[in-house]
Image 1: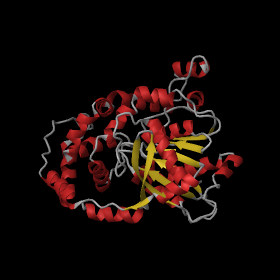
Image 2 (image 1 turned 120 degrees about the vertical axis):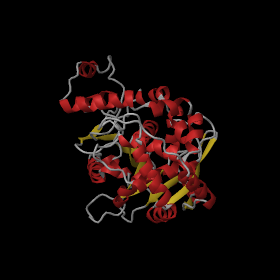
Image 3 (image 1 turned 60 degrees about the horizontal axis):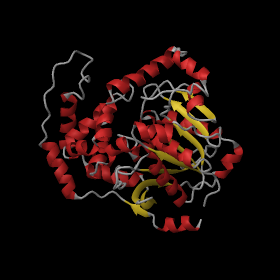
Image 4 (image 1 turned 60 degrees about the vertical axis):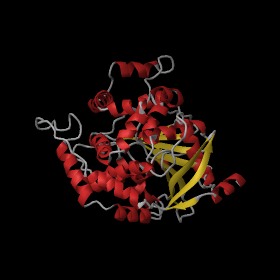
Amino acid sequence: MKASTTMSALIKPFKIEVASDTLDWITHRVKTARVIPDVIHPKGEEWNDGIPSSVMGDLQTYWANEYDWRKVEARLNEIYKMFTVDLEDGDETINLHFVHHRSDRKDAIPLLFAHGWPGNFTEVENLLTLANPSDPNQQAFHIVAPSLPGFTFSSAPKKPDFGLPRIARIYHRLMVALGYKHYVAQGGDWGSLVLRSVALQYPEAVVGLHINFPIALPPSPLKNPLALFWLAIGWLSPEEKRRIERMKWFLTEENGYSRIQGTKPQTISFGLLDSPIGLLAWIREKMQNAVEPDYVWDKERVITWTMFYLLQNSSGTARLYKAGGPQSMRRDILQNKISSQVAFGASSFPYDIGFLTKWWAQASLADNITFWKVQDKGGHFPSVEVPELLIKDILDFVHTIPVERKKLLLAHK
């Protein structure tokens, strides 16, 4: 507790205050950008080669003439209680940016929320109501939402090997610094993988882990031959087959960005960070096919998310795809099951880009699955698309945590 108290003293309040010359540069580049012409696509195939020029032209016009960062900045500072703290892992010190909304309720429990790419800490916005719910019978939470190292306002690692286990250690040290020795966690995309690493390294601290991006290696032929047989013969419902085919489609047809960022993160970052419109196209295109077909992305949200990446001004956001790439992900995360000490839950949304059946997850992902929900609406960003469904799943999951372990969540300062 002494170390935690000392670290708490180093936590500093944070407000977003972007320099005017930075905004002037961005505005100039947006207004003078060239939106290249597109070829003529058959109806329904407009996105086949990437983001259509018509979409980019509309976004550029909005950004140049209507978007107001200062209004967005003021709103962000009003909504989020933000902080920074220096946290060490080995020879690296990360100045970590995070949101911390502490509940007024004595029975509140700590919840660590983790985002991924191309997301950011604002994905937690709709979950902030969990801090002080209007219903006195509803579980309350102390919400903690850090920005990944190298993302938004967290500093970037100085060396190239800052992968998932190191980020996980930073996140755990953040929770300890805040006085939370035990906590539950929730995340999708990279956030789900970071939190799986936290659970693998600190099973005594992670009382419960809920993710919305369940992926795993095939079941082991030695440990789970029956599950592997089921997978091999396609013992799946029509809906399960559809979701697995969607995952395969994304990996083969939509994964080019990951290969580029995962091999030459510095090179691609020069191009993207020097061109606001180029970065907007890079991010917006990936957002398109990760959600339900009829979901409409708000233009202000898309540009704000792009602004977060521009303001970071480092290759850290792309570099994560190399530091946490397939080999290290397999070694550090996917080859290891989460122990029975950790209550595990997952929500599967139909238009997400990762999918498992429960029996597959039982064989390859976690030993103690206490909650499993297959939703019929939503995609890769459920806290933004269908927050009411995700919130209900989080609450339902917490109810499945064994009572004795759940008591640990109240033992914080």
